[in-house]
Image (tube, rainbow, N blue to C red; front, top):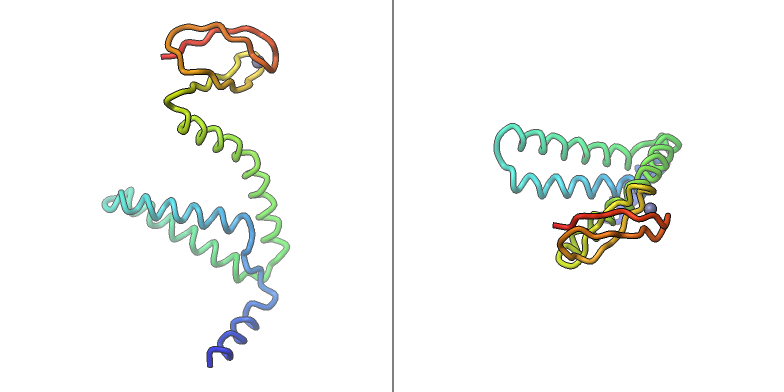
Length: 141
Ligand SMILES: [Zn+2]
C-alpha cells in the first residue's frame, strides 16, 4: 500500500521541477521569518498582511515544486542566486556588527566606501583607510 503510494508520487513528480534549489530554500527561510513574526503580531491589519504574505510565499514554493516548466524555474533560480550573492555580504556585515557591538564599530571610508572595523573607543579619531591609504576622521559615541 505504502509502496504503491510512493510509486504514484514518483510518477506524479516525473517531469516536474521538484524545487530543490536556492530559491526554494530562500522562500522557506522567508516563510519561517514571517511565521515567527506572526507569533508576535497576532492581530489587526499587520497580522493579516503577514499571514497573506506567508501563504503567498508557501503557495509559490509549492507551485515551483510541481511546475513542469523547468527552464522557467531554472531561470528564476539563477536570477535569485545573482540577487543573493549581491546581498549576502551585506547580511554578513549586519551579523558581524551585531556580534561585535560591545568591542567594535564599523565605519565606511568616505573616499573608497571600504568598511573599516574599528576598536570601540569613544571620541574623535583620525583613521587611515588600509585600502585607499587616505585619512579621515571618525566620531565614535
Ligand atoms: Zn578608503
